[in-house]
Image (tube, rainbow, N blue to C red; front, side, top):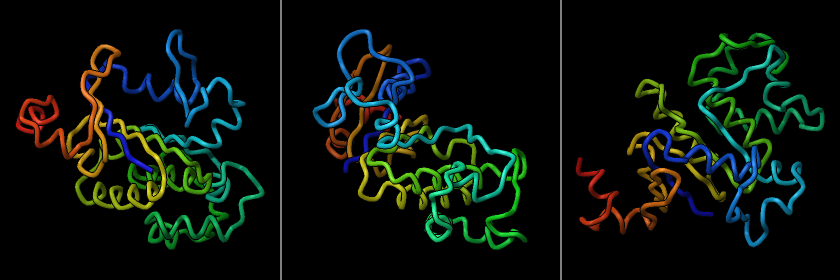
Length: 208
């Protein structure tokens, strides 16, 4: 139920760490665990059902809104889809669609913010225990960024999360901070405590 903010320069290992958790590839040394179980001991489908990931590049399929949100799973009921749309702030966009859930969308037909909210809704419908967000608001204007921030709070409620951050503003509400450099954790601790410690790397980053 805690949220971890991952900080570090490009190439420090932030994205690699999350991909190891998702088992896009496996570790050569050490281990990654969910609870007390190594991820390698879980069936891949079981693991990926428990972990939801939202990257900066959202794949929009040339298909209906229903198919895009449910990822072509016919067992996802319309009521759940509509509830996710409202909860994550896609209501105004949805009301503008003439054919509702049957409206066909494609890459380029949504704004960056709408695409990001759609990706959040996909994860919300999947209902995983762990959510990974890769800098959810890096390319957005301030108004859209605020909308995304509200959606993030809804998405993460009651879930464990890792947020990869390229900007310090992204980790204002996280519980813990890990700063990576060259594939190693250089600093780790509660955000509030690190922010108050003038000797911490995190405090120096905030000051800078």
